[in-house]
Length: 402
Image 1: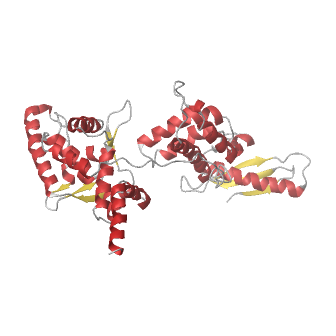
Image 2: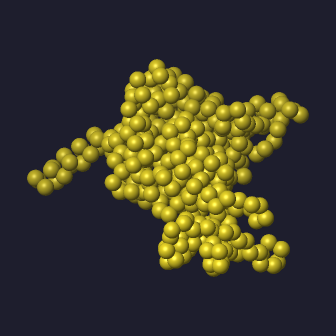
Image 3: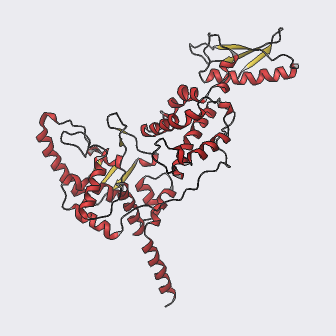
């Protein structure tokens, strides 16, 4: 805790412990000079407030012992949003967010936040600035592409606003602002109208499944992983043979492939803590995997010394994991071949979840299989089958009117 005392000349000496870097406690100090004309009590109050600021500056690395610095420079409340982001924010979020999320946050910051608020001091930013930011994003002129006249969707506006809130929350955690000012209940966002998820019905799912029997082992195994197990795209691509337990017909999801533009494809931990999970599969899927395993052995022999053994299940002709975008391309081509309406690859995950719930699997089990953090995410699959819900209503009437 910071301490201070008043000198004979009216200034205050502020002292703060900087820990024990060499085994010996290090004290750092600075001088606070009250404005002229203040009463003794007002001067002491100012010294106390400044002591708290100085302590925050020392503990957050914004003060360098032994270097002369002006009072204004060590005041953490005086740092601008741009300087805070460059010096502190990116380092903090890179430790816990996925590379793709950091890339998204960086894009929003560079394109939207810094041009408007970069020169603002942290201490001057209020919820009014967040509201102005939201209102601007909701207008048609907020897009970087001037040819796009449509305003950003309500969901996108909220995602962008979340980045602004995240920056200020980190500043609050570091003690650089007194309050987490952007987490206010009265912030108004554009109303989000949730779209119904896109999934295949029973007949379409059957056509999709039957069509896979005519595909090569690699394509069949890939698309069955999405349809029967509901894995996310990155989770499918990141699977390794060591994750498969053929004895118990289950696999472990503990990594996810990702790709950042201009960088090699790599793997990371799955989306969330709940995404690390065990998923059981039927024998028909085990057979598809074994068929692909035999086909992969042929690829391995053909490649010879060019084969790069890494243990991934789904590989290219030289043993590297497949490109993460290939799975989406294969799905689109297969849908067209079968005469099915186009669904994004993620639609197979939606189809898997919807079919499970429709056929009696309890929602908590589906949540666990899919690795959802919240049961609310799983509940979206309940709305996919309106015909089934209509039938349920008719069945009830027939039962009570007998």
